[in-house]
Amino acid sequence: MTWWLHTRRVPLLVIVTAGFWAVCLTLGNSSLPLPQLGGATSANVPLLLFAPLAPAIALNTCYGTPTAVETTALRRIAALDSLLAVAVVAATAAVAAPVAAGWISGVDDLTVGTIESAVRNVACYTGLALIGRAAVGTHASTVIPTLYALIVSVMGYGPEQTAHWWAWPAAQPSDTLSWAGSSALLLTGLYRTALGDFPGRT
Image (cartoon, rainbow, N blue to C red; front, side, top):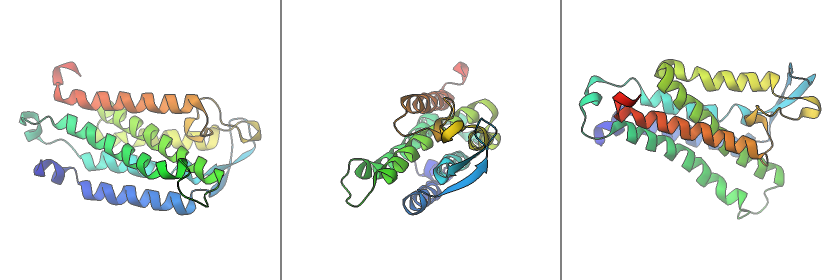
């Protein structure tokens, strides 16, 4: 276990995730006007469209390139990797829960929605990164969620700054499809990662 914690650089992942939440809680309502190609002339793209990329990319970076010794390890390394991804998403949800539940006074509805969207987007990008890791390898996998975020930022908004059905990171926190889709991506990524313990099935 010590060896796995060392190779996965868990302290670095903790620092990046903590930094992500520091940004969310201080600048979460910030936005950037960007031209649009998806129907709107321009849209105020929230910072929370991009910030959740940080823990998702850090997770895949901390996984690193599997070493030869992992193929002969008795402990199920891929299962531990899946649990690490679950821990990242669960930690973001744990931070968001008191805000979303209204346990912290002085928080307006906009901030609550922003925090909820952050959790959903972390799940979405983490799922995409894990799927990419299983499909194209660790180094190229981080391109997939980054490219998706960029496409959403310039093509994901229609008239009146409403998100298109496929632009889940840009959707309102009440959008059921965005939560269902993001959860499905995360579960698929976790499943593909866990299959690493059974090479014959991947």
